[in-house]
Amino acid sequence: IKKIASQYAKIVIDENTDLQGYYIHNKLYINDTLPDAVQITTIIHELVHQLYAEIFEQMMKLTLDVHDEFIIQSFIMFMLNNSIENHAAT
View 1 (cartoon, rainbow, N blue to C red):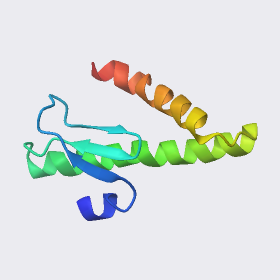
View 2 (view 1 turned 90 degrees about the vertical axis):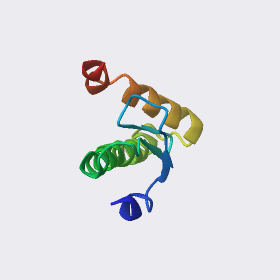
View 3 (view 1 turned 30 degrees about the vertical axis):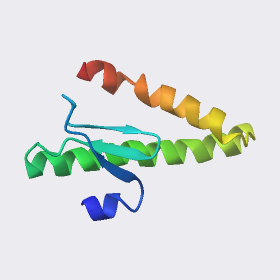
């Protein structure tokens, strides 16, 4: 799973977090102190965030005819970090 996910985003080991994992700007942060099964599901979950961000970015570029990647990526990260899922998890 790590090999497949690393084709789409950089995987970073973060043992200093209470979270199972998180996604920030093309990086999947994974707590590798967790059991293998939890790590696998976390990588898949965070990879979906990365793919969602990529698809959303391309849709926004085309729909809004905006080509400034920094602005679009900033907006997408704001949307991902303020999602209902993140508020429910806290």
